[in-house]
Amino acid sequence: MGAGRVELVVWSDYLCPWCHLGTRRVRRIEEEFGDAVRIEWRAFLLRPAPEPGRTLERFRDYTRSWLRPAGEPDAPEFRTWASDEGPPSHSIPAHVVAKAASGLGRDAFRAMHDRLLRAYFVESRDITNRDTLRALWRDVGLDESAFGVSDPVMTQAVIAEHRDALAHGVNGVPAIMVVGNDAPVVGAMPFESYRRWIARALGALTVR
Picture 1 (spheres, rainbow, N blue to C red):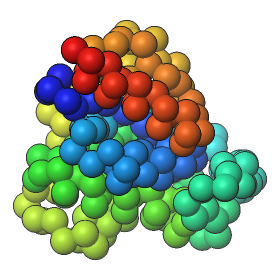
Picture 2: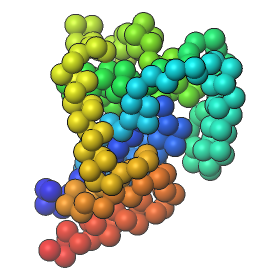
Picture 3: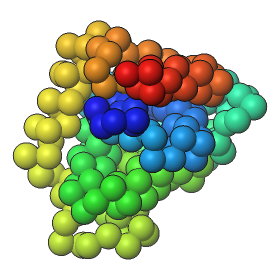
């Protein structure tokens, strides 16, 4: 951990509505604390493999549950599923594309991360579909040659991050951990709870 800076690991899944909300709160953390906080996003797989028998009708019904995180006072935009795309197959494809974007730099990852969430939770787009993912990649202006939804190395990196989360006791997302303190906080906590937690961690660094 760098002097005077708190480093956070955030485990998240692009198919998780609470992670869409959690991203909004992490962005607020970044805005408030600036360079005093550094975020490392890691993959957690709520759906590690395709689930057979999942129909679009059942999936549409499920998306009504998104209204609960949408009701939080600081929630980003949510819309229940309104297209004929999907249902999404599993968590890995979106994570692999995000991992490919991270290889182009932090700004590229941030743009892809936010684009994936908006496509899924607002635009009703299937972010497990290769053509959809390629279109989103183009939307954020990333190098076409770096697109890699089926890259085996990146797939294994995503799976390794998920296994590391399990080893840290993460059983749901979003989950946030201060580097140096191996006790993740699981669940979309209120922003003020995160804020106090990080302020205490920064205070402890100052005392040292």
